[in-house]
Length: 299
Image (cartoon, rainbow, N blue to C red; front, side):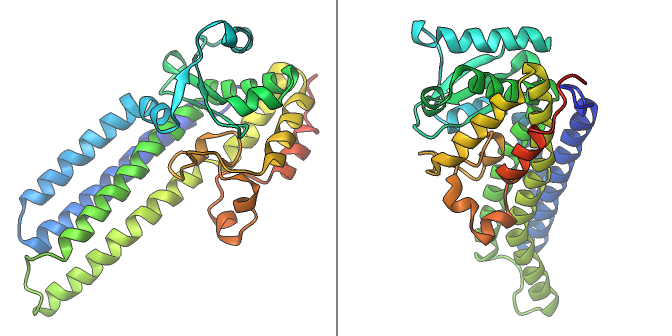
């Protein structure tokens, strides 16, 4: 039976594996540039960047995610009911109350972030508050608390920083490869350059695929465990129907953080395109609704 802690240990291991893979990608890119440019210092710089990147991803990724979504602390009397819902469900789940944020956006959506339950945060859009009734909102919050309890947020939040930084570093290396250094008349050097250019082009794609690999099955588990938490799966099902029916993208939708939200922040229009399906961060809403409506809350 799915619970908030079903895959907690595997998600922690998955995070370390993710950080190791990104570390190796940056080192490989640094090695190529150091050989091609004839400057060993580049490899040392790449090593330093990868270490700083991993440390930053672990300790500061929640702040990066909150800032990138333009979220604000949900404080004051107008947010009292939201905070009460979060606190009550957190107590039921046996979790510390996460920090609560709001995003000024008419598109209904929400996400959770943080490296562990003690440093977690939940953010909801103003559109979510306006469009959902209480049981539906509870279903969404329970879903996000499930991500927190299951340590999904550790993998999701670390991926935000790592994917972004690998893309930046790869772009930097690609620009460097076209400026001086190396003997371009030498066949071996030319082959090395070609291999390296392919590497820096493929690296961001590989990073994106790694990000997507931790997304889809996780949503089904959070849906199921969230429904068990509220004992009312129809609440979350109704919320998903309203969220998917809205269709319009969020104002600050970003591919770097799309996997963190409860639903695709780019809206249903993009979700219907072939390329978007290929790189989808969420399973189809229809499949999620079918799974939710088959949950036995008496289990």
